[in-house]
Image (cartoon, rainbow, N blue to C red; front, side, top):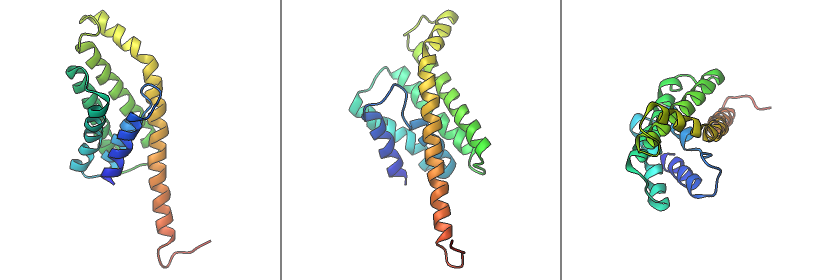
Length: 168
């Protein structure tokens, strides 16, 4: 499953897509919730490294903060969803991972010198990032729902096929 998740994330970054509309954060959230800690770390970081090797590496400071943001999404998944994946928890985890990624990745843009390294520059950086946040939140919600919904559906199908269960 780890390899499939990594390949999905790599493909999503290489195929044409709207800015910040990829499943990488949702995959980190999903990996954190469903995989062991070591494998969960591998999903976002391997996906980013492999796709960046093709796309091209960029400013090291920005990369660091982006990678940290996706790692944080994995930590949100392991912290909020490892024991319970009820819909309200999924909603909170999705919003939290989107916000954490937005905060860290934009901080990285500011720290990289794309904006003046002042409080006003930091504010301008976060303001300029708001249109991207809309896509981040939308893709995180869509892909998180698809990943966790698919898992729930698969588990329900497997339970219904077990011997001794009633079939409709």
